[in-house]
Length: 162
Image (cartoon, rainbow, N blue to C red; front, side, top):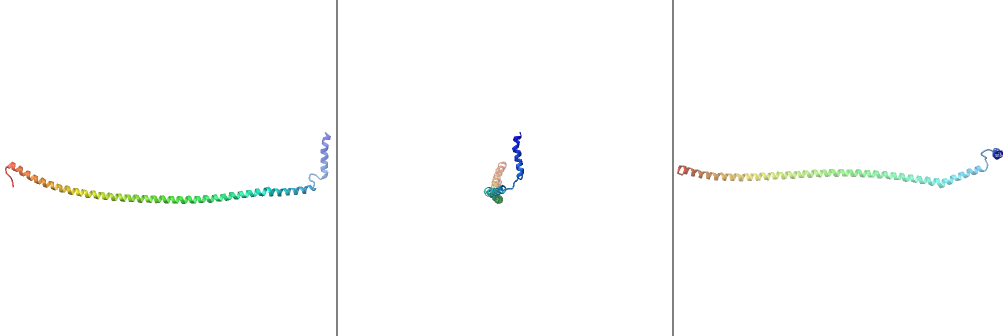
């Protein structure tokens, strides 16, 4: 078992003599330069385009949001205008209906008054005719009563009265 652990022990002793875990030699600055170059390449190839795409998308979203807010405000204005116009049209329609009803009432009232006046005139005319016919009938009846009276007297008394 010693022959298996021997190379490991030798490697540890050798590393301890050479300066430990970090040896500052030419590889460390070379690794730092490689890291900086890798960071610059990644920045140029990946991070800048990705950042630009994110910024462009944010600008697009912001513009769309502003545009949407303007559209919403425009639609709200238009809705208010349409509601005002509709309310005005309803008021005008109500006024027109009220005016038409008033005119119809006036026409009906006038027609009723005219009909009543005509009926009254016809009633008066009929009453006049009835009165004339009544007078004629009374005059006729008076004449007939007179004649009948004379005939009755003549039959009863035997002679005529003058």
